[in-house]
Amino acid sequence: MRWTLAWIIFHLSFSYLSAQEASEPKSTFHLKLGGGFGLQTVRDNAMSPLQYDGIQGAFQAAGEWRRPQGLYRLDGLFWLGEASAVSGGTTNNYSFAVNGGYLHRLSKEDARWQWRVGPAITTWGSFREHLSLINSDFFYDLFFSLGPSGMVEREFRFFKRDWFVNWQITIPALTYGVRPNYSGLEVVPPDEEGFQGWEDAQFGSFNILQNVKSQIELAYPLKNGNRLGLLYFWDFFKSDLEPHSVKHSMQSVQFSLHFKL
Amino acid sequence: MLKLLSLLNSSTNKIMKNIIILFLFTIAITSCEGILFEDDPKPDPVATFEALWRELDEGYSFFEYKNINWDSIYNVYRPKVTTTTKILDLYNIMSDMLYTLRDGHVNLEAGFNRTRNWEWFLGYPPNFDFDLLQRNYWKDEQWYTGALIHTVIDSTIGYVRYGSFSSRISESQIDLVIARFQNAKGIIVDLRDNGGGFSDIPLLLASRFTDKRRLAYTFVVKNGPEHNDFSDPVEVYVEPGGERQYTKPVVILTNRMCYSATNFFVAIMQSFPNVKIIGDQTGGGGGTPVSGELPNGWIVRYSSTQSFTPDGFNIEGGIPPDIKVDMTESDRLKGKDTILERTIAELK
Image (cartoon, rainbow over all chains, first blue to last red; front, side, top):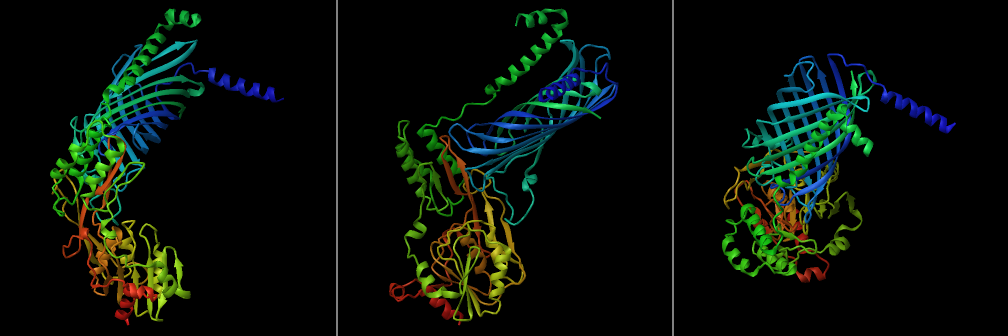
């Protein structure tokens, strides 16, 4: 009985996974939810001269609205975990990236490789709490940027199944950024609430943030327009925002379900 | 494997081959991100010493106030460090260098030991005897409300002992104590041997002893690498707080072990018209400490601000009492606390 039940569940699951839609409609919206893990590397001169590395838990919540001429994407990526230096301390890390944009189709509708370009708004927030430091133990990067984004995508058949792959690269060009001040202490009365870092925020371009965001996504269409997704995300930035420079990279692999709404 | 290769060789799967190449290319490029990060600084003794000296040079807030020539100190200690200096010797040299700052907020945490300069209280009379108080003054009336020990002395005087600002106290606990002594002739707040703690509690506690909004203290924060690079002064105010405030006479008992947050509390309270300080000068500690990491992973802590009373007095060196009293040995042998006795007489 147990084996019969297991076989039925396996069969139904396999049938669901192997069944595919004949073709996708011209306009679709997918909600993507997923999770995985990431590797983070940071050298924050506000915190330490040492490099900190660590494994992060990764989560994704995203939306993708596909129209005949263009594609609207809003990707929310979240990471949390610890990082440590070879001969130093340990930090608790919390990071997020919320990137949105419109990608206009450049190629003909029936072209095999679909090229798209458009503007993107990107947000990066990273918070590190150093467990061995006091008072000046909280470090952050907050960047809000605008820049060009490009994407190439195509559909293909493999093992008699339809697949879908895309690679998107975004380079923020205009940035509003916040980093810790000189001493790492807030210059306000101790009983005053709220985040004071905004007072030190700066507008700039490549002088305060050199950033590349790259993501490659493989999708396997399912029945009813849903999909299984595999995302590899890489983000590297170097900020020379005064008074402390920072270099940061994050790469993560995430599996996700794309629900057609 | 052969089957997979033959699949990849078929025309249909040339596309897949391209995509795999694209995947591998992307991963290969991003896996080489190591070249984007420079190597960690060498943790050798010279680099570690240099990093410590520079961290203090650019971040420590009291060079000018204490008239310390940090370059001269470098010239004394730097020649003692070579690339072959052993860890313990390096620790001792760096410890000696930090000792010249005469600052209880300066420490080097090396994992196996922590440097400290405790001259601010070891060179002075203790002026506090916990056992004597417990046996001869607190008696049966003592209450333990969180970290606050309170009792009634001579039927009319409230006595509150707060041993450490590192032990958090809640608003309701403070309110309970204030309510208990609302009809007392005066309140004694005994802070002797209180070495400090959380920086928000001094304001919270002081808010129960003022009838109006007052300037508590001002502070400046180091905001650049030069020794006199500081922010504009920030004014900190204390406002009446809690269910009720006690504005009748209050005496704060101090000794040289009153440091850091305790020093701030004394500075705030001293400007209130109903408050007197009796005992010895406080130990000081008027800078908020921050910390930094060195190339070998050791942590250095140091002062990064300066603080001033409303009339501009720098509190780093301690706050003199209004009435200077030391405990005498003869009183102690008789079971009497000289400072407390003097305070009781003052409040009667």
